[in-house]
Image (tube, protein in one colour):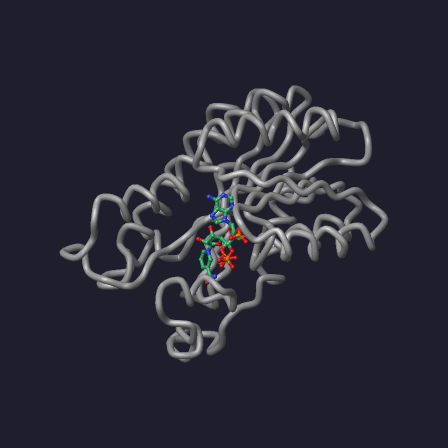
Length: 250
Ligand code: NAP
């Protein structure tokens, strides 16, 4: 079954692609011949580095600053895609944050809301706009987390809960848009070497915990990007509402 438009080159929007898993995913899609929309919130210099690497593969890169937790920013982001690319084949809902480790008893409403709107409201908003545009089918991949299953007690249960919501969102949306030829899947990474762990107040968290994983090591952003690309690609044409754990056996 053909699930994406037949016009080439295909276009992928990867939210939060200035750094980490999103940046690796942008490069992975570029290597496969996709034009890529690189979205960031504040780190323009990193987004520019990713864009020049993307362009080195002979495809187009567009950089768009947008806080994807904010509806007005999301609308502007998609308007930019309409103008510059005229189509969208793949959306990767990757942007996400976590806050310093603490138990629930110390969490403020402000913090909880920031985590939920950045990690899950963003996926609702971006997917809504993507589905409107995927009139010839398409593919959405949500970046969840192993935390959806562990719950991350005493570290960030707000973050873990946002990823649990992401998993339910993946299943519901996949069933809602399957008849439109749009597939919706998810990856659940864990313990990947990126800046994010520093935001939680423990830069070396992966190295502290890696020996507890059956594979005995942390993962790389590129290993997550490969799973995201597989789910988005025609290689996964009969796969929807599905999850790949990229988590070393967690
Ligand atoms: P990261 O290195 O901290 O990168 C986060 C990216 O998201 C950056 O490009 C950042 O942009 C962007 N971003 C943050 N808030 C945004 C917003 N409101 N609007 C637009 N972009 C925003 O994180 P990462 O580790 O690559 O994480 C990527 C995804 O993987 C997240 O959803 C995370 O929950 C998930 N994940 C990561 C791990 C792991 O071990 N690293 C494990 C499981 C799941 P700026 O550069 O402008 O700040």
